[in-house]
Image 1 (cartoon, helix red, strand yellow):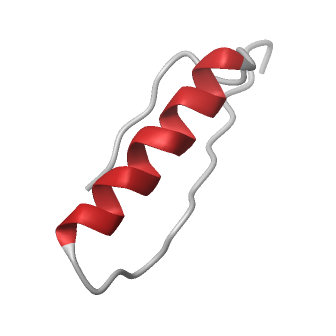
Image 2 (spheres, rainbow, N blue to C red):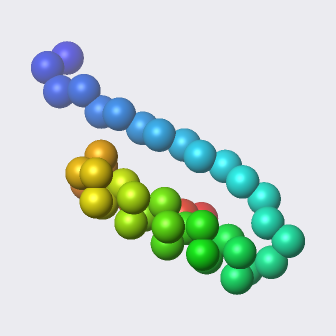
Image 3 (tube, one colour):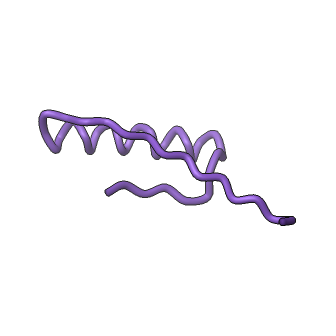
Length: 43
């Protein structure tokens, strides 16, 4: 295998959608600003 694929999974629970969306936006921005990943998603 020459190409390695890294997968990072983070999980959290929230009392409401607003808190979850705020954390999602903050973490996504951090990863993009630090050039840590090329894709980011949430389910």
